[in-house]
Image 1 (spheres, one colour):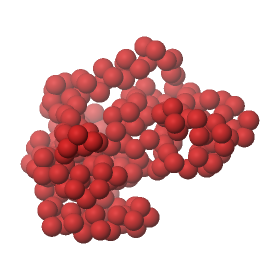
Image 2 (cartoon, rainbow, N blue to C red):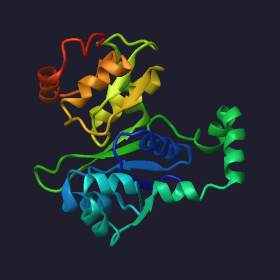
Image 3 (cartoon, one colour):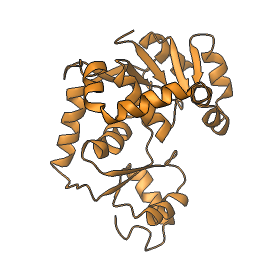
Length: 234
């Protein structure tokens, strides 16, 4: 139903972003689940958000070793896999989607355009270091304001290429490294883990990245393992 919370247990990826936007288009509120919080933390977030459905990916669950977590989740919510949904998209739906693409403005106004600036846009959760994770609700106004605040300190332009390695269940990875590039028309490249210190500098070089968001610890380790020319455009 409209305004319902829907869980996302996904890494930062195109699949996550498409699902995030699709939920908004149909009036649902994405709840970004922190898969690194452990079984107790994720189930606590599910119960706090009163989730009935969680979307995830079989490939991600397998590669991240989250089979035990998902098994525990299945006792609380319906777990839907993006790979399974892809197989259920019939030709009629694809044609309908193609037509909607050409009339996206009117389509959005009819389906998702009823949202107001102070309506819920997303739910994030704290790390739970002081007990159970606490839900943090961000409105559409919050997100746009955060994007504007960042650009008041750093000059971006549509020619920038953003390399996002941060998890989107954190405000920094979601707002700064994911939604800000879309908001200002920059190219966005996803990489699923910030911990691959040797790989990320090479990717930055290959894609000609001009912007890389990260914490001090992450950026320090990238610098240690980078070739002197890897960040030539950064």
